[in-house]
Amino acid sequence: MTANPEPIVQQLQHEFQHLLAYVTGPEARWQTAYTVELTLFRRRLGLGAALLRLFCVTRAAVRPAEPVTAPDGTRLTSHDQRPTIDYSVFGNVGFARPYFIAPGQTGLCPLDAELSLPARGYADRLREWAVYGTTDESYRESPTVLERILGRSLSVHALENCVTEAAADVAGV
Image 1 (cartoon, rainbow, N blue to C red):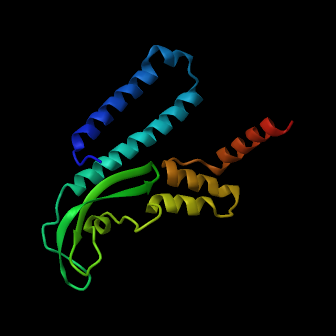
Image 2 (cartoon, rainbow, N blue to C red):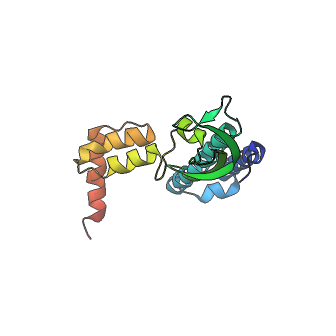
Image 3 (cartoon, helix red, strand yellow):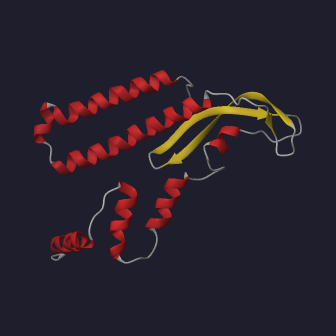
């Protein structure tokens, strides 16, 4: 797990160039809007994961300025870099961060608290969406879900039209 952000930046630039080629290249002529939209959405999630990793690696490169102490006040010393995984909406984002220890103390990674990383489990946004998506609500909640996830609003009337159109697709099944 590299702590150098430069390869990540190069990877992001390379991936963005591939996205541009995907939508403007000769193969784009044979694609449908549906397949391009789905591909772009999934690849943007990959870009988001790389950007989130770049953020975490950049933050982890900065050592704490003040002495790191355990909850009981014991001064901890720098030991090494410990890997962690943030289970985010972009996928699993791994990076190493500074780890501090002292005899008789549990080790500590101060960056985890600074970034609000959970001790285990999923990132806040992913947990929020998962919980929100499992609520047993009317289909009228769908516009709220789309707004929260995609930042796009959809009227209830538009949603009703979508449901009617979708029902015609499955009526013969």
